[in-house]
Image 1 (cartoon, rainbow, N blue to C red):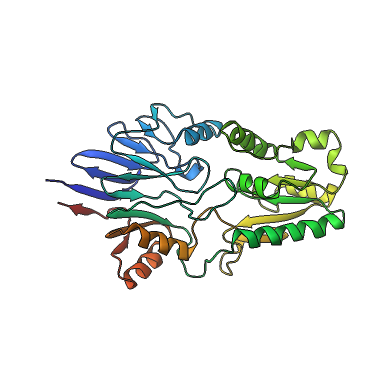
Image 2 (image 1 turned 90 degrees about the vertical axis):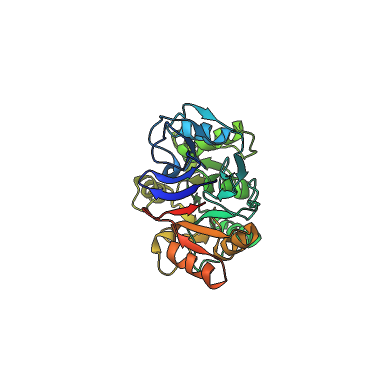
Length: 327
């Protein structure tokens, strides 16, 4: 008799299957079971070691660069399948016992990142960061056209441009999409991450870090382009780049189009681009999975689950103390 329990705990999502414990993106690894880490963004990395960690090699390497060295790391376990989630380099979903956990997921192709192809499953545990109908993202070709025209206009006026996106993920996509603009420089932290991506086989344009470029007086020769982490306009780095060189910022965020969430529009120009599925892609992903039961996590969990129920799919948010048993 097969018994399965899926529940949210203070340590993350716990799946118990005939006594076997599987933690999905746990805050702390558990010594008694399998600990799956979907990718190396800080909100998905455990805070300490203590049990076997299942993840991609890329996730392990990137996590190490970010200060967390995975002990007892494995990249495969019998009966567990790691599925590309299309989110960032090395990001995976996990398929086991007819359960698929998406981690953070994107089904669109973006530069070197191929969109996820979701497997068939009976139970789907999915993020819904952009699980409201207002979030419908533009096509990549539209983004490229818009940004290239904007950079061209600024270059024509001799104005340097700083392209802002998360240090891990978006910064590498931005580098690949717009790295043909030069001279090309990088915030030192982005350069470190890009260098690791190249070591892991990703072809990205190279360039000089901002400290070296400024030391050698290169930033005074305008215009230029720089890729930097998404940061507040109050950050001293951006203040210096603006006051010293007249730089203009272009920020990339899935929240850029939202009228309700202003934090996506804190740059001179805001471009809607995300490493997650938009609303329609989330719905399509769920339908394609064929799941009989869907649990929503991370984002608009109530709203997205309600929408799925309206179209005939059994769905509910997975919250702490919630529990589902299959016998």
